[in-house]
Amino acid sequence: MTDATSTSANTPSSGNGEASGRDVGLVGLAVMGQNLVLNLAEHGYRVSVYNRTTETTDEFVDRQPFGDHIVGYETIEQMVASLSRPRRIILLVKAGVVVDKVIESIVPFLDDGDIVIDGGNSLYTDSTRRQTALADQNIHFIGAGVSGGEEGARNGPSIMPGGASEAWPHVKEMLQAISAKAGPAEDEPCCDWVGPEGAGHYVKMIHNGIEYGDMQVLAEAYAIMSAQGRANGEMAATFAQWNDGRLKSYLVEITSEILAHTEESGQSTIDLILDAAGQKGTGKWTVISAMELGQPMMLVAEAVGARMVSSFVETRARAAEVLPGPDASPALDASLTLDDIGDAIYAAKLISYAQGFMTLDAASEEFGWSLDLGSIAKLWRAGCIIRAVFLDDIARAYAEKPDLENLLFDPFFADALSSAIAGLRKTVVAAAAAGLAVPAYASALTFYDGFRTARGSANLIQAQRDYFGAHTYERLDKPRGEWFHTDWVGSGAAAVSGSYSA
Ligand code: NBP
View 1 (tube, rainbow, N blue to C red):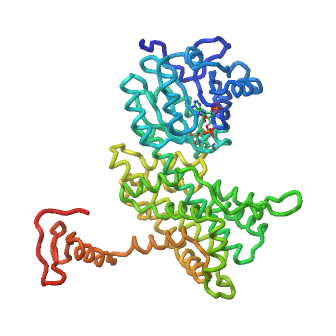
View 2 (spheres, protein in one colour; view 1 turned 135 degrees about the vertical axis):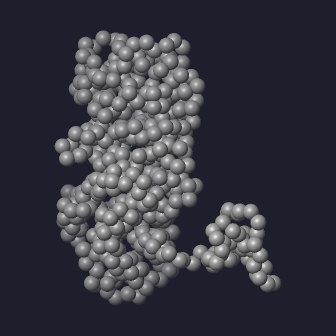
View 3 (cartoon, rainbow, N blue to C red; view 1 turned 90 degrees about the vertical axis):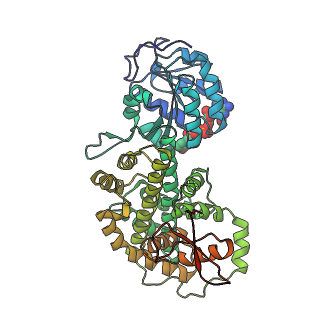
């Protein structure tokens, strides 16, 4: 490999269509890749594109409207050779082993200091591994979470880059230019450096986990309102109204539009859709990571579980015939209002985000990433699927108190939760009495009640563990850190030397 010598092509070049010195390369012309290329070209960047299947490249280049700002290449080698140095190459290929294969095929043509950006939904541990391996070859690797789907990629996604920080100055202007913008003047890019190793993909993973939670929270509101006998049009109007206030968010907005959508026949489209939710794995990854870090991200865990239960279509149909529910009449407490349900959505979301930020905080500590939680909240204000007005409040909470122990201790969130929690409680009680599953709401309420309980019931669990496994326990009448074992069938407690952790 030779040294990269020329200056950065961070700003768009004038673009005269020459075959060398192009600004950025992109591999992978499926839905995300094509839209991100159009976004780059619209911002003046000259993009060299490559796709494994050449016909896809040809079709795309032929119909795109940006002329020689977008040029297709038949081989990776030609694409790499077309770029100015340090070369910047974005990968938007299928996550997993494909990313490794593509990196392997590119590396032989790269020089010291070139930059590879993986913009797919890669697992953060893979990104950490890739960054380390490529650093050994003097290649800078950036794992960049990109959220917003097809529309975001085209018009401005939320971008969460992490990895080789030396590369950030070479890509900052470009990635911030194509990202969504937020803030009062809509000029603050939803793209900033997140941290080392796989930090960017970690933050994207937590974003996706929270997205699972938000979707479940809205689906439960839909289930309750349906059980109340409300028509889809009325529910659409309610979600639209909620979208004018504290619940304002992309997911509430599209939920309203979905519920209002009808077929040519006049029938609601939502009523024709099979109730079996798919998933690609980022919610599951979130829960696994939270568990590994000892963080109760339970609302997202329930959301992942609810999708699993939904997929048992035939089994649920059989269970519906043999497993009785409560004999409730009317089906739902008639005093449960739309305001109560709105409160349930809001309180559950507050708790879910608090759990998400607890996990981010723990990951930052565990991996030594120094994550800026307020900055992360800002990245999610626009462009991404969980964009919502209250991310401004989260950003403000961490800006005011960067060492905030828990989001729920911020005065704004504490007040907001205390005013909404009664609605959540009423909704959970009504749903449980009617035999309606509301796993996200119930989990949020249970977390809230457990979290605010100064003395709980884990003393019994410690006693049970000590009884069957001599796992020892701490005592209220002795200092923390002193451990005891009781001979439960004999007599008395004996101090155990040293510390013990389970
Ligand atoms: P896909 O995840 O469907 O991947 C398709 C692309 O990967 C095509 O360009 C395909 O080339 C290429 N590819 C495959 Br498959 N195997 C390959 C190989 N062995 N060598 C080279 N290229 C290979 O595309 P996508 O939906 O655009 O998503 C791209 C990334 O962005 C993924 O990581 C995804 O999880 C993430 N993401 C997607 C969305 C979304 O809304 N779709 C949102 C956010 C993030 P081919 O044309 O030759 O088959």
